[in-house]
Image (cartoon, rainbow, N blue to C red; front, side, top):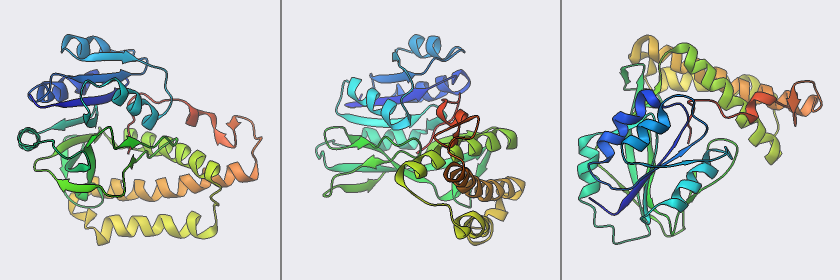
Length: 274
């Protein structure tokens, strides 16, 4: 075992969570699950697998990850989502670390899947994130969406071998539901920061994102899944600024809160982001 605590936020993740926990138990004796009112077997599965489970109110992605970090037994934190599964190469890479420099953070390559198909190109095929860090130096930011790690100036970033295998969406309908939800949260974030929705953001940026993802990053080589990913990247960009534009034009419109559709304030069942 290594002196690393794993922090996972969950809601209705029974289908995937046991696969991830089975792998993680090979390197750690401290897995913290911060659950948000799961109605499936998530809580019972995690408890049966020896995890420490805390059922908290939903305060946002970054906020709930920080709650888990505070509850951890060790200062070194591996932060993952419930739909991410470490492979053996990654576990070996972590097990070989000395953990003697609190200013070092570790960047982990991702392998993304659309359903069960691995995605090798586009933005998804190039994905990697810092997920292993020391909590005395690093915390998550707490915006409505797209939380990021707040890193010290003198941080040293090192890459790990292996992958986190990210089973992002099962199908196109789930993908679209996620991008709609993310877009609403992003619009809320932009509204709070005073960002504006202009012509370029609404009409040029979406097309640019499609061309970049599908053509420049070779997304077309992933077949129909590459097409869906590029199309959703375009739609996501447009929706963010569409919702922001509505918020700025009609802040008191019915079914809107602070100009954003009320569902943006609700935690959706199986959506995680970074």
